[in-house]
Image (cartoon, rainbow, N blue to C red; front, side, top):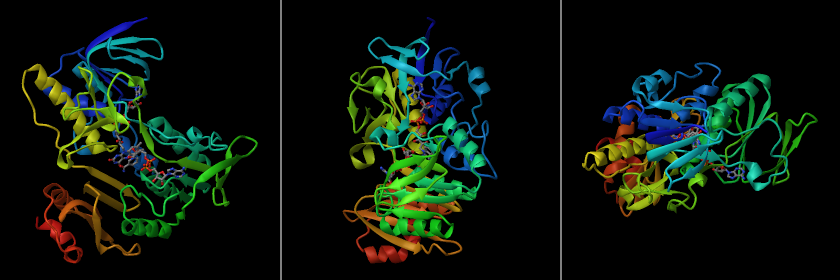
Length: 434
Ligand code: FDA
Ligand code: NAD
C-alpha cells in the first residue's frame, strides 16, 4: 500500500486544522511539508455556520462561502489556496489507526502516513441516543448535526416534510440553534429537555427565562423536565412518534437530537496522557508524547487565568489553540520561545434575531441587568458572575461590538464588585467604564 511521508501532519480537517494551516503558511512552510488528513470531503470550513445560515430558507450559506478563516474576518482559504501553498489536503480519508511510537497513521483504505510532527485536531463526535440503547432511536429521520453531510441531510428533509412536525431532543446549543432554524423554515417545533431550564451549563434561570419566553413567542413549544425514552416508526421505518418519560407521546416527522458531544480521542487511547476526557497538553498544546500536539475540542490545557486545566468545545478556542500550537512548533525549531496560552473563554450563539456573547467564567453569584422582557422590541440584557468580590464572567444579549468588547474586558480584568445591588443597577454602564 502507498506510504506518504510529511514533516507535519494534521489529523482532522475542521476549524483548528484550517487555522493551523494559515498559521503554518504565515510562519513559512515549504511545499510538500504539511498535510491535512480529513474524514470530510471538503476543505476546512467554519463549522458554526451549519446550525445557522446553512439551514435558513433565505440568505442561505453554502460552500465555498464559509471556508475558514472568514468566521473571524480573515482570508477565505479555498481548496486552491492549499494547492498554491503546497499543502496537501487529503480529504475523504478516515484515519483508523494511529501508532504514536512509530509515528505512523493508517487510513480506512489502508494508506500509510508518516510524520515528524503530528497535530491532533479530530474535534468531537455527537453522543447518540442509540449509545444509551433508547428504543427505536435508529428510525429514519432522526438526525444529529456535526459535519456538513449531516447538515445536507437536514436541508433535504426540511424540503421533504414541509410544514411537518419536529421534535428537538436537547436544550443546549444544538437544541436552541436548531429549533430556531427549523421554526424559521415554518416547521412545527417542540423542544424536549430534562433540565428545569435551557442551556443549564451556562445560563442562569433568569437568562434562560428570556430565551424560553422569546422562543415561545416565535411558536416553539417547550417541554422541560423529561427525556425521550423511545420512538415509534411507520411501515417505512420513518419516525412518527416520540415517547417521553413522563408518559406523553409527541407526533414527529423529523427528530433532531443534540444531547452533547464527546472528544474524539479513541485513536490515541493508552498512548498519550488524558485528562477531563481530552488529551492533556501544556500551554503550547504539546502532549505527553514528544512531537505530538493536540488542539481544539480534544485538548485539555492549562487555563492560566483560572489556574486550572480545562477543555473547551467552542470555535474561538479551536482557532486560537491551533495558532498557538503552530507558533510553538515553529519557534521551537528556531530555538525561540513564545508566551504561554492565556485564554479568556469566549462563547456565543445566534438564533432568530438574537445574538449573545459570554466571556470568562460562570461561577459564583450571578446578577441580571437590563431589559429582559421577551416581548420587548429591542431586548438588551446581561449578567455578571461575581466570585470572591470580583466580576469573573459577563454575558450580554443584543450588545454592539463596543459593548461586547467592554464585557470581554470586564471578564479579563476582573474588577472588584462588593455591592451586587449596585452592580445590577449600573448594568452595562459598569462594563463600559472599565
Ligand atoms: P472540528 O469538529 O471542527 O474538526 C474535526 C475534524 O476532524 C472533522 O473534519 C472530522 O471529520 C475530522 N476527523 C475526526 N476524526 C478523524 C479521523 N479519524 N480521521 C480523519 N479525520 C477525522 N462554537 C462556537 O463557539 N460558536 C458557535 O456558534 C458554534 N456553532 C457550532 C455549530 C455546530 C453544528 C457544531 C457541531 C459546533 C459548533 N460550535 C460552535 C463548536 C465548534 O464548531 C467546535 O468547537 C470547533 O469546530 C472545534 O474545532 P476542532 O478543529 O477541534 O474540531
Ligand atoms: P450541549 O452540551 O450544549 O447540550 C446538551 C443538552 O442535551 C443538555 O443541555 C440537555 O438539555 C440535553 N440532554 C442531555 N441528555 C439528554 C437526554 N437523554 N434527553 C434529552 N436531552 C438531553 O451539547 P449540544 O447542544 O449537543 O452541542 C454539541 C457540541 O456542539 C458542543 O460541543 C457544543 O459546544 C457545540 N456547539 C456549540 C455551539 C455554540 O457555541 N454556539 C453551537 C452548536 C454546537
